[in-house]
Length: 292
Image (cartoon, rainbow, N blue to C red; front, side, top):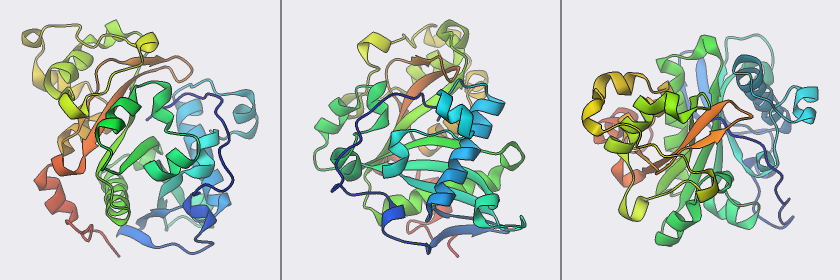
């Protein structure tokens, strides 16, 4: 999920922090397939390595225009990193330390941590707080900054990222996941087919409805339902969004153009109760399928 950079408050020093503040140099492996394993970052050096991987994907590969300090350090950095947990996929066959072995990453921000610090990133683009207010009894986690090195964009890596997200959700009693997901390009009209497909077939409604902020709103209903072939439209979606929709996710109303990243963003909402049972069975209701 490509995300742009904005200035935000630093938050309270007494607030709950990320896993880096509490686990030291040891951390549990959440899943393993062959030489790949997934777990949370447990040192500042690992978090910085994840930021460097994000830079390689977002800036070097996708051409994102990041702030000068990010360009100088060659790391995708913002103030949310310090309070988020960073899910990693590591290739243990790579010679070197864990920092050299990171091939994929996700950024996870729990609701209690967000509330005590900077809030959720997604509120810069979408009216997320309206949805949160409808579910005061539920626990949310925001997923973001997902990226994988090109040579590792395969089923095994994706399965481990989902294994890690699922294990994390169970560990923290999460009721719903959400976050921004991106389509490449900054002209919504050029993305009319995939945007219209998502609007007509996967729109979040009722208690799960989320809309883009009014000043950033771009209509996704650009073609009538009958004018889009569902299979070909689905195939035009980025792999990450396809994965979310297969699992059972819904899409918010309205897209947001993120010019620094060169993307058009949509809001993804995935209540745990709506996850496709086929995928729950695949990973195990207790996240045991790929557990080491």
